[in-house]
Image (tube, rainbow, N blue to C red; front, top):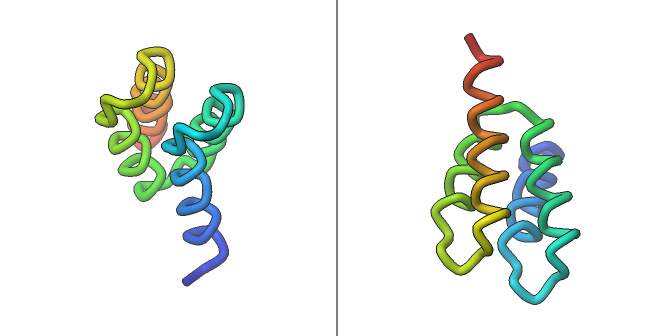
Length: 73
């Protein structure tokens, strides 16, 4: 597994871990958005679909995903 894929997996796990503080999960979502890859986009969409997360986190994940889509064209 490449270093970037490993980092992506760690960030996605942090972003979805309800045992961690909201601030840490939000930072992980923002980092995923900065990665800007197709894999990060998929991870962000999975996070946005996670109904256990608070609305703010889900909306942020969607916003970050939208930014990746806009920048890919």
